[in-house]
Length: 463
Ligand SMILES: *Cc1c(COP(=O)(O)O)cnc(C)c1O
Image 1 (spheres, protein in one colour):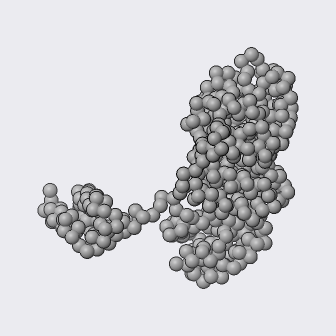
Image 2 (cartoon, rainbow, N blue to C red; image 1 turned 45 degrees about the vertical axis):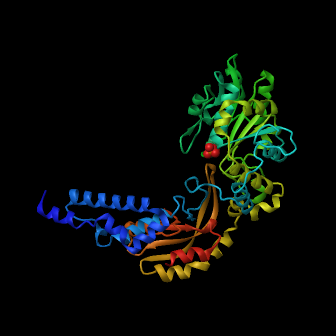
Image 3 (cartoon, helix red, strand yellow; image 1 turned 120 degrees about the horizontal axis):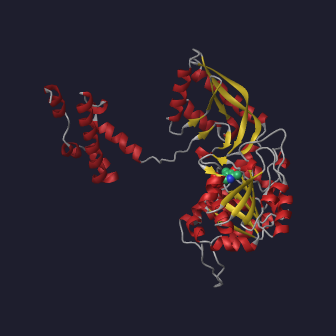
């Protein structure tokens, strides 16, 4: 070992000496001697590694107590930080998709802090499973005979297939063999459910006769998948729900549709692009429809299977249901969200997803105008800061080709360098409440569609 390294090792403070310092004792009182000692040991190991590898002490060598205090502070922070979603994507999967309504938030907090009647009936009558009450609400809203609730829509599709078609064939159109982000691929889910996928038709055109010709004594299910995250345009044909339901009846085969986003209300009534509704397919005679809880529905992460009682009964009894079921928090959030749908006129104010999706561009522009001057004053030496029109996305694979007119505050580097823009984005990601924008055309865009509180944003951006 080099003489100089030895000198560096000697500079490392002893842990028991550090532990005696008043500032360190305060941390011990807050988080215990075990955590503080472990943290100091780790710092010492890191310092030794730095000497061994780089021949120098770490940057925080000057002040061990300050470094320890910083690590202690980081310990108090959640890994799930609140952020400003100014990406322009309303249902952003990486930012946790739907933001819950106040009633859902309150409902979750209620059931978290007390025992609840999750699978307990106060009148002594055993009502079956934990989904019962919310399944009744779902039936009221959609006209389904019964419903089943699981962890997410991927789980819903898996459970549906495993129950209805395990060991048998499922017929699906080639144009609908979708991959949803995060490794949900229809063919893989089929395989995991123990089903044999039978692809029919072509990428752009599938006819009813394609389905019909593929039916044999191994067929267990006729299925459609909503192509939620892409669209095929031009010379296309797909089999409608109604035709598929009729074919199912003719051959006494069940039919199912994985709708993905699925909206329970007519989105066009709110000036939004049309999105298929589960109730339409159910009324057309489709046996089973699955949707996500945290996409357009605006609720917690969940998968909902709606449909005929006979099939839902079988799905509820499948052993996988036990592995995929949801907890009381999800059920409480889902119930509160669904209750908002009983009074649809309240949705655009009380359900954040719908409130943001239906925000009128002029209101968003006003919001941008109200903060742009302060931002110019603060960032104007390095950036051109202005209000510009932009297009928001619904997100989570919903309505991929549809964009919603919106407004953004944009930041263009005066020196024309991309690195300056990267620095700004990085700086904003490190704020106490990080600000997440979108980089496009050499600018950083803050789409204000999902911003409820301009003051709160200014407070972090001007610090
Ligand atoms: C989003 C989606 C899924 C997956 O749903 P999760 O709730 O994210 O598990 C499956 N199928 C379709 C068609 C989808 O759009």
